[in-house]
Every structure is written in structure tokens, then in C-alpha cells.
Image 1 (cartoon, rainbow, N blue to C red):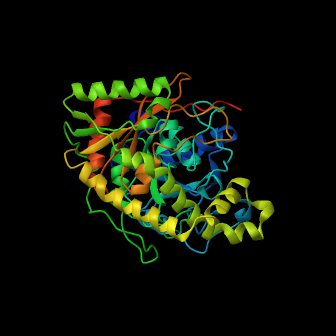
Image 2: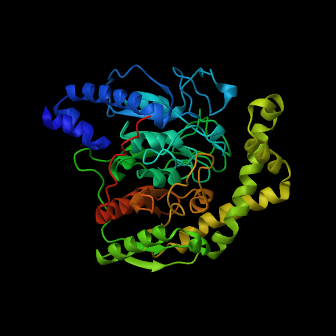
Image 3: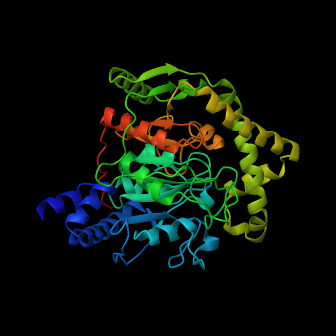
Length: 446
């Protein structure tokens, strides 16, 4: 029992917990109670949850005993779904989102709803960074990233429209995974920009992110943009098979000079360590993507968001933020010609990336410019995430160092569109080679 309790308290990953629960079923109940107690103790400072469930009853299935936190723009039929907005403060949807229903059918415990920025855009919620309460946890999947980093849950769902999984994963020192566009159905997820919205996850290990996609990938008639990636299975006993000594394209972009010195140093140290371990690394210049992605992404996002939110801000001017109003205003000014040109750029660059990476297994790049910024009013810059979101490419953020204030730094692995399994296998090899374990964040007391 002592060994079981040690695993429970160590910040174990999903697969490690499932192996434990198979041998000691009673440990699953103790783990559920441990997570609930930890959440309640941390919440006065961390503020990661909009809602905590009191029900941790185990259900049968491959995820039995695993508590999963759900970003609060993802519908839950038995818990409020506020979308980070006072408009939906007491809203309980009539039905679960597709991905929540799938989790329930897999036996997972829906642990609670995590704080999101308003409609997953830029107006932040109250969540703090578990490594330092004075710094942002990133956004928009703020609560999900913080909850995993603090060891409250081993798995949490997020969404990404620009950088809302990869960036907070880097800021909190956890694994963040954004699958290919359309890999996980978005039915029941409040839209921000349907051409860019992705469902992703936060976990402790790459194995766990891969396991999650193997179970959560699928299709839904209610998500017209869905395109499931090829199915695969992950062994609970053995985990994901890494792709040994991969060929990596090192992409810095012109914005590299703006990265914090510690982030540059951590990245260069990772490059050297991977090369020493046998990986082939070569600098790659994706100039057209670098120069055009921000304009195209902004055009698509703002115009689609204007269609979604224009009526809302008219009806609720006192309950919508200036950031959302500015987004809608920008979107209304976009011409149909500019929108169609941006969509054409998106498609062309997605196909071009596959060609550019013909001699590589994946891209190695930054997930952010450095540590989580000081203050809670800004969730950080998404410029290193947005190009890959625009293309719908699978992306993984891994912890890789610490910055000048002791907060986590990361690296990002990106693969060609719909090459999720290979991208995850590369990430597993990078993770096992870097061997950087940031540990569990001990949340400061109130």
C-alpha cells in the first residue's frame, strides 16, 4: 500500500495510474479522494476551476478511475458550462459535448470544469500560475494547464484556436498536445473560429497524450470539419514506441531574436543534446509561412468570430469584454475577398508544409518566447503556436528548462497534417532524451 500511495502522490501519469489500478483496484478510490482534497486545498490560490464535482464514483471502462478536467467552453450536461462569460454563469447544457460523452463511456471521471478566458479569447479569468501566483498560466485553457501542473488531475481537455494549448503547457511545465485539425470532434464545444478551433489535451507524459488521442479521435455528424486521423492503439503496459533518432527541421522564424535569452539557451541546449543522441537536425527557413500566417490567421479568426458573437455583444453590451468587442469590430471590417484569400493561403501552406518536411520526421521549434509573463491581465504571445494552428498540424509542447524566474520553459514538436502518431513518437523520443522532469508545482498558500 505504501508503494501505491507513493505513486498516487507523485504526480503519476495516466498509464502509470491505470497499471496501478489494475493491480490494486482500491487505489483508484484513494486517488479520487486525493485529487479532490488537493483541488480544494489549492483552489483559493490557484483558481483553476469554475466547478468541482463532488462525484468521483468509478465507472467501468479503459479510463476507469482517471479524473479528467474539462475546459469550461466544452458542454457538460450535469455541470455548468459558463464559457468564461457572465452571460452563461448558471448555464447547464442539455447534452454533453461529443468528447465528454466519449470520456464518460470510457469510464473516466469528469472531475470538474476549468477556467477559460472569455469564449476562449483574450479576456482572462482568475487562474494563477501554480509555479508563481503573480504570473499568468497562459490561456485560453488556463485552468486545465494549471490543474495538471499542480498534480490535481493527470489529464485535462483544452482547446486551441491560436496557441491556447501549447503556450499554457509551456508556461506550466506540462505536456500539451494539439492534434491535427478535425481529429477530435468539436460538437458541443463553443466555437471561436470554426476554421481554426481544435480540441487538445494536457498531460504529464507524451504516452498519456497519445493514449488520449487513441481513445478520443473520431467523427461526428455535428462537426462538418471533422477528419479523423488514422486509428492506432497504445499499450497500457508499454506505452508509445518512440521514433528513434528522428530527422528534425529546426525552425526559428525571424522572431527568434525576440525570445528571452534563457529560452534561446534552453532550445539550443536541447538541439545539442538531441544531436548528441543521434538525431539529425537541420535548420529550415519557412519564410512564406512566417511572413503570412499572422495576417491570414487574424483575418480568418476575426471574420468568423464576428459572425458568431456580433449578436451577443449587441444583446449583452455590459456583459461582454472590450477584447471581444474589438475582435468583432475587426472581423466586420474584413472583406469577403480578403477572407477567401486567407483561406486559400491556409490550404496552400498546409500542403506546402508536407512538401517542405519531405526529408524530416517533424519540426523542432519554440512554443513561446519564454517564461509565463508577470501579471494576470495578459496570457502571453501566441506567435510561435499560431502558424501550426493555421495549418491544422499536430503539435506537442514538452518541458525543457527553466527561465530567469524559475518558471518552466518548453520546446515544441510539430508534424505534417494528419501525421499525429509519428509526431507523438518523435515527441516521445525527444522527451526520453531530454529527460527534463519539471515536477509537480506546489501551490503557494493563501
